[in-house]
Amino acid sequence: MRMLRYIIITLLSLMPSLGLLYGATKPKVSSGLSHVNVAVNGEKTAVQAGQVLNVYRGDNIVFIQAESRETGVKPSLLAIDVEGFHSAPGSGPEAEFDDRGVDINTALLPGNVFKVTVRSGGRPIGQIKLVVAEPRFDYAVMLVNGSPMTVRPGGKLKLQATDQIKLDSVRSNISDPSKIEVEASGGGALRFKYRGRVFGEIRLPLQGAGVQVP
Image (cartoon, helix red, strand yellow):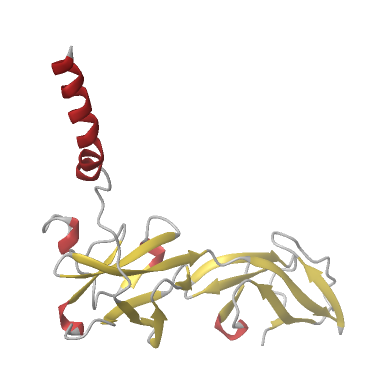
C-alpha cells in the first residue's frame, strides 16, 4: 500500500512538467517585429506589428520586407508568410514559406482575413493581419433634367426620350471615389467597377440614352 501511494504521489508531481511537454504545440509569436513594408497597387505603406492592412477585393499587394526590433537581424533574413497563400506550394514546411516580393491579386485569395507571420530562421517574431473587403455599391445620385434622384443597387430610372441624364455621385465603401470606374453600356445600364471588376449596376430603360458621367 505504501509503495502504491508513493507511485501515485510521484506521478502527480510529474504532471505539470508533462503538461508543458504536450501543451502549446504552436510556437508563441514574440514582439520582435517592428513593421512590414507593403505596396498596395504600387503605393508603399508600413504596417506596424499587430496592426491591420485593409484592402479591397481586386487590389494587388506586394509584401516587400519586414523590419525587426531585435538588434543584428537583417531584413533580408526575415521571411513573410501569408496564411492561405503560398508562392511555392509544397516546397517545404509552413515555417519555410516566404511570400516576399510576390504580386498577390486579392481577387484570387480564398477568404477575407489572413494572418501574416514574420519569421526569423523559422521562428515567429510577429504578425500583422490582412483584411480584404468586398467593394460595396450603396447608391448613385443621378441628375435628371437637373433634379437629383437616388438609385440603389439593381434599381432603374423612369425616363423620357427627351430627359437629360447625368451621374452626380456614387456612394460605396471605397474611400476614394476617384478609383471607381463608370461604364455606360449600350443596353441601358451604368456599371460601377473597381480595378476592372463590376461591383454595382443601375438600369436606364432607354436604349442608347446619353448619360454624362464625371
